[in-house]
Length: 295
Image (tube, rainbow, N blue to C red; front, top):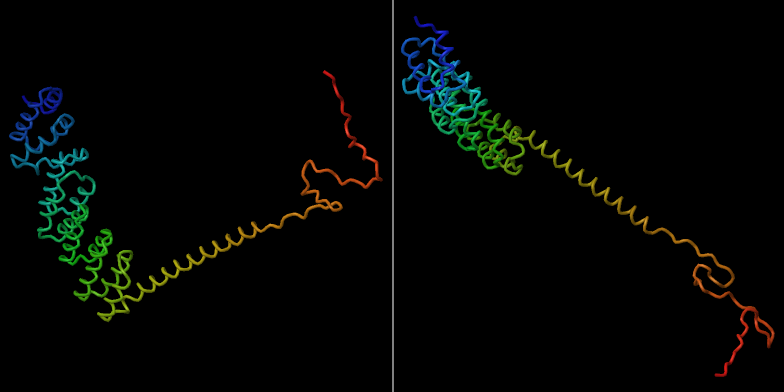
């Protein structure tokens, strides 16, 4: 008689990999409800890409979903794409978003192109998220505008660091008469917007009240920068004045003895001579005698 526990113990010790797939086919034909138990036993030695392809050919991927989840931590491309497809078919957008965030080894653009045509808005929202993750900012924002996902559109425009894209989003909000979204985007995309462009748009559409908080913040920021520059200039002036004062230190007064400046006299200077009577030579300066030698 066939015993499942004994079979799993023996098959795990087999060296021939081809026997694994024959065992999977056997379970698929006769014991399909226990196939995930066998896959968990064989998973350390299976080629996950080949295994996914094996079940995909027989159209039995939903049957092995527990196995796919258990081996997804390997971040295998085939496993990720198979599981993402299953979650899309099951309309589990929360599980799909979690899978996308945790495991990134899959064809992002292909999945995004398929999801943007999905009938549920949450899957189209994931498509915009995928476009954003691949730096396709314009496609991402346009998809958000199409589905009226205003918050996501403002967030992605701000993350794009593209002033032109942010200003086009502002104009679109005004065209759609979304004044509140216009005011919100002024702060969401604050660092990307030019105040003169915002002023012109607000004046032309007569919505200065919605733009006034933005201009108050801009004025405050500019005044803070100007005050900071003045403080730096004042500190530079003070340090320059202190440096000049140190350079202008007064020199010490020289010491004077009689008519001779001792500080300016050389090291071999001769002291002044007293006046002596005629015919007397001062001591210490006697003419040395001259000696002659006859050869």
